[in-house]
Amino acid sequence: MSIVKDDSFSLISTQSNKDGIVFKNYHFGMKRINKNGTQVWICTHKLCNAAINICNGSIVKTSSIKPDGSHEFEHQPKMSLDIYECIKSIKRRIEEEPTAAVSLLYDQQVKKFRRENGTAASIPVFDRVKSSLYEYRSSKQPLVPKALSSIDIPYRLTRTLLDQNFLLCNNQLVSVVGFASSIGIKLLGDNAHWNADGTFRTAPKLFYQSYSIHVWDKFSMKPVIYAALPNKNTNTYDTFLNELIVYAQINGISLTPKSILIDFEMAAHHAFSKNFPTAKIKGCQFHFGQNIWRQIKKKV
Image 1 (cartoon, one colour):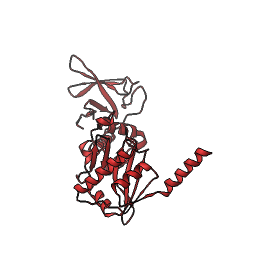
Image 2 (cartoon, rainbow, N blue to C red):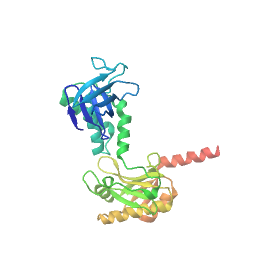
Image 3 (cartoon, helix red, strand yellow):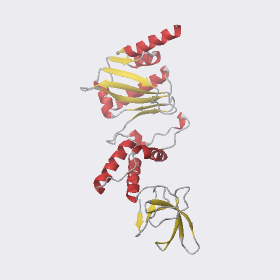
Image 4 (cartoon, rainbow, N blue to C red):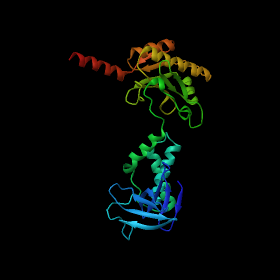
Protein backbone atom coordinates (compact mmCIF):
# COMPACT_ATOMS: atom_id res chain seq x y z
CA MET A 1 0.00 0.00 0.00
CA SER A 2 1.42 3.38 -0.97
CA ILE A 3 0.71 6.39 1.23
CA VAL A 4 1.22 10.10 0.56
CA LYS A 5 0.90 12.11 3.78
CA ASP A 6 -0.18 15.71 4.26
CA ASP A 7 -0.58 17.62 7.53
CA SER A 8 -4.26 16.73 7.62
CA PHE A 9 -4.99 13.76 5.37
CA SER A 10 -3.45 10.63 3.88
CA LEU A 11 -3.84 9.53 0.30
CA ILE A 12 -3.93 5.74 0.06
CA SER A 13 -3.88 3.25 -2.76
CA THR A 14 -6.36 0.49 -1.96
CA GLN A 15 -5.95 -3.23 -2.63
CA SER A 16 -8.15 -2.82 -5.72
CA ASN A 17 -5.77 -0.10 -6.99
CA LYS A 18 -8.27 2.69 -6.39
CA ASP A 19 -7.32 5.97 -4.74
CA GLY A 20 -8.76 6.79 -1.35
CA ILE A 21 -8.28 9.36 1.38
CA VAL A 22 -8.23 8.98 5.15
CA PHE A 23 -9.11 12.23 6.92
CA LYS A 24 -9.64 12.26 10.69
CA ASN A 25 -10.05 8.45 10.49
CA TYR A 26 -12.93 8.77 7.99
CA HIS A 27 -12.52 7.33 4.51
CA PHE A 28 -13.26 9.21 1.30
CA GLY A 29 -13.47 8.16 -2.33
CA MET A 30 -12.92 10.25 -5.45
CA LYS A 31 -16.12 11.74 -6.89
CA ARG A 32 -14.82 14.04 -9.62
CA ILE A 33 -12.10 16.46 -10.72
CA ASN A 34 -13.33 19.99 -11.45
CA LYS A 35 -12.20 21.98 -14.48
CA ASN A 36 -9.85 24.03 -12.30
CA GLY A 37 -8.12 20.83 -11.17
CA THR A 38 -9.72 20.68 -7.73
CA GLN A 39 -10.44 17.13 -6.60
CA VAL A 40 -13.73 16.40 -4.86
CA TRP A 41 -13.73 13.47 -2.43
CA ILE A 42 -16.85 12.18 -0.68
CA CYS A 43 -17.32 10.04 2.42
CA THR A 44 -17.60 6.33 1.64
CA HIS A 45 -20.60 5.98 3.98
CA LYS A 46 -23.59 5.69 1.65
CA LEU A 47 -25.80 8.06 3.68
CA CYS A 48 -23.16 10.68 4.47
CA ASN A 49 -22.74 13.86 2.38
CA ALA A 50 -19.39 14.86 3.89
CA ALA A 51 -16.89 15.98 1.26
CA ILE A 52 -13.46 17.55 0.97
CA ASN A 53 -11.96 19.53 -1.88
CA ILE A 54 -8.24 19.19 -2.50
CA CYS A 55 -6.08 21.42 -4.66
CA ASN A 56 -2.32 21.17 -5.06
CA GLY A 57 -2.07 18.60 -2.26
CA SER A 58 -3.96 20.64 0.34
CA ILE A 59 -7.53 20.68 1.58
CA VAL A 60 -9.17 23.91 0.43
CA LYS A 61 -12.77 23.21 1.41
CA THR A 62 -14.83 20.82 3.52
CA SER A 63 -18.57 20.16 3.50
CA SER A 64 -20.74 18.60 6.24
CA ILE A 65 -17.65 18.08 8.42
CA LYS A 66 -17.49 19.46 11.98
CA PRO A 67 -14.39 21.25 13.37
CA ASP A 68 -13.35 18.10 15.28
CA GLY A 69 -13.40 16.07 12.05
CA SER A 70 -16.64 14.18 12.75
CA HIS A 71 -19.41 14.32 10.17
CA GLU A 72 -22.76 16.06 10.42
CA PHE A 73 -24.37 12.75 9.52
CA GLU A 74 -23.32 10.91 12.64
CA HIS A 75 -21.57 7.61 12.06
CA GLN A 76 -18.46 5.92 13.36
CA PRO A 77 -15.15 6.44 11.53
CA LYS A 78 -14.33 3.48 9.34
CA MET A 79 -10.88 2.96 10.91
CA SER A 80 -7.69 4.86 11.61
CA LEU A 81 -4.83 4.78 9.15
CA ASP A 82 -2.83 2.50 11.46
CA ILE A 83 -5.71 0.04 11.76
CA TYR A 84 -6.25 0.24 8.03
CA GLU A 85 -2.60 -0.69 7.47
CA CYS A 86 -2.96 -3.63 9.85
CA ILE A 87 -5.97 -4.97 7.91
CA LYS A 88 -4.07 -4.47 4.67
CA SER A 89 -1.15 -6.47 6.05
CA ILE A 90 -3.55 -9.33 6.83
CA LYS A 91 -4.81 -9.25 3.24
CA ARG A 92 -1.25 -9.30 1.93
CA ARG A 93 -0.56 -12.40 4.02
CA ILE A 94 -3.73 -14.01 2.68
CA GLU A 95 -2.51 -13.39 -0.86
CA GLU A 96 0.99 -14.69 -0.10
CA GLU A 97 -0.21 -17.74 1.86
CA PRO A 98 -3.52 -18.76 0.25
CA THR A 99 -3.74 -22.12 2.03
CA ALA A 100 -3.14 -20.76 5.55
CA ALA A 101 -6.07 -20.35 7.93
CA VAL A 102 -7.41 -16.80 7.73
CA SER A 103 -7.98 -16.70 11.50
CA LEU A 104 -4.32 -17.65 12.09
CA LEU A 105 -3.04 -14.91 9.76
CA TYR A 106 -5.33 -12.41 11.49
CA ASP A 107 -3.99 -13.35 14.94
CA GLN A 108 -0.36 -13.17 13.80
CA GLN A 109 -0.67 -9.77 12.14
CA VAL A 110 -2.66 -8.23 14.99
CA LYS A 111 -0.06 -9.39 17.52
CA LYS A 112 2.72 -8.02 15.31
CA PHE A 113 0.91 -4.70 14.94
CA ARG A 114 0.44 -4.30 18.68
CA ARG A 115 4.00 -5.37 19.39
CA GLU A 116 5.46 -2.84 16.94
CA ASN A 117 3.11 0.01 17.80
CA GLY A 118 2.93 -0.56 21.52
CA THR A 119 -0.78 0.01 21.52
CA ALA A 120 -3.97 -1.77 22.42
CA ALA A 121 -5.77 -0.01 19.60
CA SER A 122 -9.30 -1.14 18.92
CA ILE A 123 -8.58 -3.38 15.97
CA PRO A 124 -11.85 -4.96 14.81
CA VAL A 125 -12.32 -8.42 16.29
CA PHE A 126 -12.07 -11.32 13.86
CA ASP A 127 -15.83 -11.90 13.76
CA ARG A 128 -16.34 -8.35 12.47
CA VAL A 129 -13.88 -8.60 9.60
CA LYS A 130 -13.88 -12.30 8.75
CA SER A 131 -16.50 -11.94 6.00
CA SER A 132 -14.44 -9.36 4.12
CA LEU A 133 -11.23 -11.36 4.66
CA TYR A 134 -12.78 -14.60 3.38
CA GLU A 135 -14.29 -12.69 0.46
CA TYR A 136 -10.88 -11.24 -0.33
CA ARG A 137 -9.29 -14.69 -0.27
CA SER A 138 -11.98 -16.01 -2.61
CA SER A 139 -11.33 -13.15 -5.03
CA LYS A 140 -7.69 -14.25 -5.29
CA GLN A 141 -8.49 -17.92 -5.86
CA PRO A 142 -9.06 -19.50 -9.29
CA LEU A 143 -12.70 -19.67 -10.32
CA VAL A 144 -14.51 -22.82 -9.21
CA PRO A 145 -14.93 -24.99 -12.33
CA LYS A 146 -18.42 -25.93 -13.44
CA ALA A 147 -17.47 -29.41 -14.65
CA LEU A 148 -14.89 -32.00 -13.62
CA SER A 149 -13.45 -31.95 -17.13
CA SER A 150 -12.46 -28.29 -16.73
CA ILE A 151 -10.50 -28.68 -13.49
CA ASP A 152 -7.05 -27.12 -13.67
CA ILE A 153 -5.03 -27.67 -10.49
CA PRO A 154 -2.87 -24.60 -9.68
CA TYR A 155 0.84 -25.42 -9.57
CA ARG A 156 1.23 -24.21 -5.98
CA LEU A 157 -1.31 -26.83 -4.84
CA THR A 158 0.82 -29.58 -6.37
CA ARG A 159 3.81 -28.72 -4.17
CA THR A 160 4.53 -29.23 -0.48
CA LEU A 161 5.88 -26.53 1.83
CA LEU A 162 9.34 -27.97 1.06
CA ASP A 163 8.60 -27.46 -2.65
CA GLN A 164 8.42 -31.20 -3.32
CA ASN A 165 5.84 -32.86 -5.54
CA PHE A 166 2.47 -33.45 -3.86
CA LEU A 167 0.33 -34.44 -6.84
CA LEU A 168 -0.13 -38.21 -6.97
CA CYS A 169 -2.41 -38.24 -10.00
CA ASN A 170 -4.85 -36.19 -12.04
CA ASN A 171 -6.64 -38.80 -14.13
CA GLN A 172 -9.04 -36.81 -16.29
CA LEU A 173 -10.56 -39.89 -17.94
CA VAL A 174 -12.32 -40.93 -14.74
CA SER A 175 -11.91 -37.63 -12.83
CA VAL A 176 -9.69 -38.97 -10.04
CA VAL A 177 -7.33 -36.57 -8.29
CA GLY A 178 -4.84 -37.84 -5.71
CA PHE A 179 -2.22 -36.26 -3.46
CA ALA A 180 0.73 -37.68 -1.52
CA SER A 181 4.08 -36.35 -0.37
CA SER A 182 7.31 -38.31 -0.69
CA ILE A 183 7.29 -38.73 3.10
CA GLY A 184 3.69 -39.94 3.01
CA ILE A 185 4.28 -42.55 0.32
CA LYS A 186 7.35 -43.80 2.22
CA LEU A 187 5.30 -44.15 5.42
CA LEU A 188 2.71 -46.09 3.43
CA GLY A 189 5.37 -48.44 2.05
CA ASP A 190 6.95 -48.96 5.47
CA ASN A 191 3.65 -49.77 7.17
CA ALA A 192 2.11 -53.24 6.92
CA HIS A 193 -1.34 -52.18 8.14
CA TRP A 194 -3.49 -49.55 6.42
CA ASN A 195 -6.80 -47.91 7.22
CA ALA A 196 -8.84 -46.48 4.34
CA ASP A 197 -12.13 -44.63 4.32
CA GLY A 198 -14.11 -42.02 2.44
CA THR A 199 -16.11 -39.05 3.64
CA PHE A 200 -18.71 -36.99 1.84
CA ARG A 201 -18.98 -33.81 3.92
CA THR A 202 -15.45 -32.65 3.06
CA ALA A 203 -15.55 -33.59 -0.63
CA PRO A 204 -14.50 -30.75 -2.96
CA LYS A 205 -17.26 -29.29 -5.12
CA LEU A 206 -18.19 -31.48 -8.09
CA PHE A 207 -16.66 -34.55 -6.43
CA TYR A 208 -18.66 -37.24 -4.65
CA GLN A 209 -16.25 -38.06 -1.84
CA SER A 210 -12.86 -37.44 -0.27
CA TYR A 211 -10.91 -40.65 0.23
CA SER A 212 -7.83 -41.14 2.40
CA ILE A 213 -5.47 -43.88 3.50
CA HIS A 214 -4.02 -43.75 7.03
CA VAL A 215 -1.12 -45.52 8.72
CA TRP A 216 0.34 -45.67 12.21
CA ASP A 217 3.71 -44.29 13.19
CA LYS A 218 5.26 -44.36 16.68
CA PHE A 219 2.82 -41.80 17.99
CA SER A 220 -0.51 -41.83 16.18
CA MET A 221 -2.47 -42.68 13.07
CA LYS A 222 -1.81 -40.25 10.23
CA PRO A 223 -3.41 -39.68 6.81
CA VAL A 224 -0.77 -40.10 4.10
CA ILE A 225 -2.78 -40.48 0.88
CA TYR A 226 -5.59 -38.16 -0.18
CA ALA A 227 -7.96 -38.40 -3.12
CA ALA A 228 -11.05 -36.74 -4.54
CA LEU A 229 -13.33 -39.27 -6.25
CA PRO A 230 -16.39 -38.64 -8.46
CA ASN A 231 -18.32 -41.70 -7.22
CA LYS A 232 -17.87 -44.96 -5.34
CA ASN A 233 -17.73 -47.36 -8.28
CA THR A 234 -15.30 -50.26 -8.45
CA ASN A 235 -13.67 -48.84 -11.59
CA THR A 236 -13.01 -45.52 -9.82
CA TYR A 237 -11.39 -47.20 -6.81
CA ASP A 238 -9.42 -49.44 -9.15
CA THR A 239 -8.10 -46.45 -11.12
CA PHE A 240 -7.12 -44.62 -7.93
CA LEU A 241 -5.24 -47.64 -6.52
CA ASN A 242 -3.51 -48.25 -9.86
CA GLU A 243 -2.34 -44.64 -9.87
CA LEU A 244 -1.14 -45.07 -6.28
CA ILE A 245 0.92 -48.16 -7.13
CA VAL A 246 2.51 -46.44 -10.15
CA TYR A 247 3.31 -43.34 -8.08
CA ALA A 248 4.94 -45.51 -5.42
CA GLN A 249 7.03 -47.32 -8.03
CA ILE A 250 8.21 -43.99 -9.46
CA ASN A 251 9.36 -43.07 -5.96
CA GLY A 252 11.10 -46.44 -5.50
CA ILE A 253 8.53 -47.65 -2.97
CA SER A 254 7.03 -51.15 -2.90
CA LEU A 255 3.49 -51.35 -1.51
CA THR A 256 2.94 -54.73 0.17
CA PRO A 257 0.47 -54.26 3.03
CA LYS A 258 -0.47 -57.28 5.14
CA SER A 259 -3.88 -55.93 6.11
CA ILE A 260 -6.19 -53.12 4.98
CA LEU A 261 -9.09 -51.98 7.15
CA ILE A 262 -11.97 -50.46 5.15
CA ASP A 263 -15.70 -49.91 5.58
CA PHE A 264 -18.29 -52.40 4.40
CA GLU A 265 -18.38 -51.21 0.79
CA MET A 266 -18.13 -53.93 -1.81
CA ALA A 267 -16.73 -51.71 -4.59
CA ALA A 268 -13.78 -50.67 -2.43
CA HIS A 269 -13.35 -54.26 -1.20
CA HIS A 270 -13.12 -55.58 -4.77
CA ALA A 271 -10.63 -52.89 -5.84
CA PHE A 272 -8.31 -53.36 -2.85
CA SER A 273 -8.46 -57.15 -3.22
CA LYS A 274 -7.55 -56.89 -6.90
CA ASN A 275 -4.64 -54.46 -6.46
CA PHE A 276 -3.27 -55.93 -3.22
CA PRO A 277 -4.05 -59.66 -3.51
CA THR A 278 -1.73 -60.70 -0.66
CA ALA A 279 -3.29 -58.29 1.83
CA LYS A 280 -6.08 -59.31 4.18
CA ILE A 281 -9.01 -56.95 3.61
CA LYS A 282 -10.91 -56.33 6.84
CA GLY A 283 -14.17 -54.55 7.55
CA CYS A 284 -14.33 -51.86 10.24
CA GLN A 285 -16.49 -52.81 13.25
CA PHE A 286 -17.95 -49.31 13.45
CA HIS A 287 -19.12 -49.41 9.84
CA PHE A 288 -20.33 -52.97 10.36
CA GLY A 289 -22.55 -51.72 13.18
CA GLN A 290 -23.83 -48.91 10.98
CA ASN A 291 -24.66 -51.41 8.26
CA ILE A 292 -26.62 -53.61 10.65
CA TRP A 293 -28.52 -50.61 12.00
CA ARG A 294 -29.48 -49.51 8.47
CA GLN A 295 -30.84 -52.98 7.74
CA ILE A 296 -32.81 -52.98 11.00
CA LYS A 297 -34.40 -49.61 10.21
CA LYS A 298 -35.44 -50.86 6.77
CA LYS A 299 -37.37 -53.75 8.31
CA VAL A 300 -39.00 -51.86 11.18
